[in-house]
Length: 240
Image 1 (cartoon, rainbow, N blue to C red):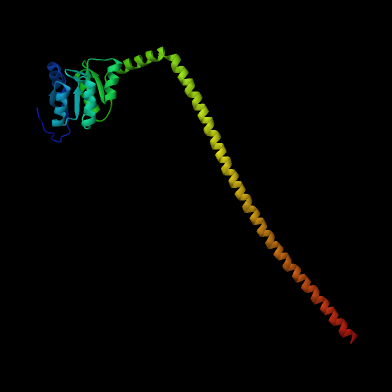
Image 2 (image 1 turned 30 degrees about the vertical axis):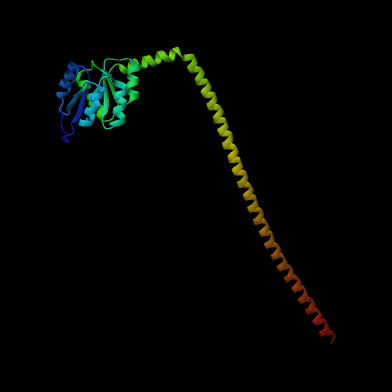
């Protein structure tokens, strides 16, 4: 099936599943939505890649289990070769391992095959906008799985946390010491520079005052000499 994007804003979808009944059911669900359009089908990963290259769909609704191909590898290939096509996984698996593998491979959403039609359509729209979509109940299962794993390894996690905190404290103390030393070095250099400026200014002032004092001294000597000469002149005049 080949269609052309008319630019009306519809979301173009490729359905990738090896079961014909599943493909028809998904197509029936989505055909009820005016903004969603199924543009093609694929039974396995190889055909999916060919159809994506040919049709350039916005969304590929993909099952993880397909004949002759690995669903996770198919997701990785699509993400590497067709960056404009987003992957929404529709799988019968609900365990943490399958969900993590799909997400790490590049899937933008993960739903189970029991997802109602309205939720499937909303998930397609959400993924098309760039949002991550996780099916109802899957988040709780992931949290429980992670919690159980953390409980089993709580001792090792606590030890790792203590080691990490000690290293952080040690690194932080080293950084603080280094910063303090650096600031002291900077301030020491600054103070030395300021003292040098003050000494130079004091020396300049001292020289100016000395020169001024010498001028005053010369003037005093000159006045004394004038007075002596006047007295001497008056004395001579009086004698004559």
